[in-house]
Image (cartoon, rainbow, N blue to C red; front, side, top):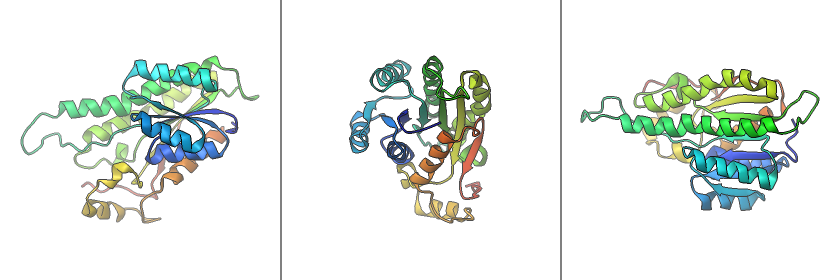
Length: 254
């Protein structure tokens, strides 16, 4: 599928992986809508890349649907939708004080998993209504973001790993269901990347994690994530899979 001239929508697009993705798609010629919890931050990135910025919480289905409708009206049906919105939580199942942690678990699932599903749900409907783009009948591609934590979750990551595991598990059944509409679904599972979420890691934990990255032995760069998004968008045979983007890392237990 050609990126040039296509409408692209990126959630979590005001920072980190999402911002890098929005910039790269814009450089490739896409009309980019940037969605973020912070409307001002989304508008700032959108102004930089010549796109459109919107404030939206992916856990708010009504607001999300309104934004998608506005994007369709202004730019046309989205053909490339990338879900980068998410939260990172660290909460033990049994903390030292013995407190129940269900609220934290539920918030993580609602944002990371249900939010991703909501984006996919609305995007698929709009793509299915649009005209095919090529002889294969392609109508669009949905790219979700999991994490290597879905397989290598550390202590304190039960909620986060569960949410990202759900995203990964949706990939193949979603791709199979949406195939008849010419809609592809892929998921990227990044390792440790230089983002606002990773910036809060203590130095000792960061150092321990980097010891488990064979090559290159460093944090991933957001544009390296965006490079893979671009390749997925243009390569029609990439469908129904989860790609680990981690330098062959396997996260330690703690």
